[in-house]
Length: 172
Image 1 (cartoon, rainbow, N blue to C red):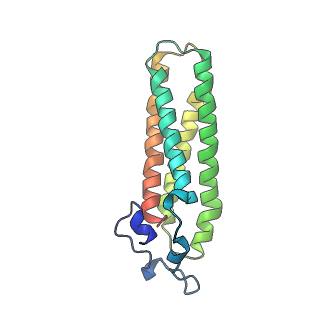
Image 2: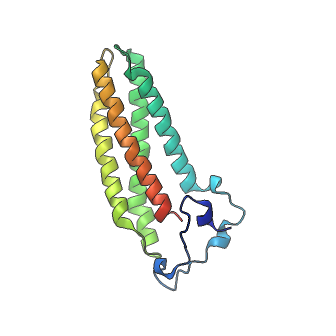
Image 3: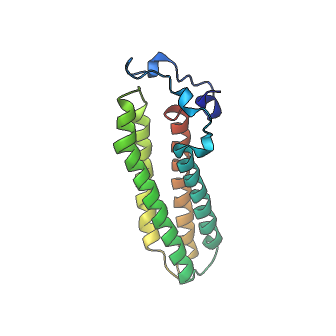
């Protein structure tokens, strides 16, 4: 069974010559994946950790967004979780932009333009949310917390759209 057939990108043909950059790098790597389940693949583990982290952040924000008063320890936990998540997504996007995609571009024809657009959208949404998170403290209004929830959901949707597009084009 081919790797791409196990991914969400049904119908993608990694052997199509349109993807091959040169004869020096043929599309013959399928045998390298024999016996290695997708669950042990770095790309999939990274994606699944992002998805899991997004769900956890969303649950934490939703848990406090309906309150009239936020306690300081709650604000500190959410701010700390956001800081770690932002560090993870920022370093991951940097690694993909600066290391992985240039390496792959030497070997295959990739759809890099959409990825750059996604990265910019994610960074902008994360930066805006970061400003809100830094202002998070005890006794913030219910409206402020709802604003954070709305901004986070917008950010989350951008990350999930990016992951889906990348998994359907570049990952296979």
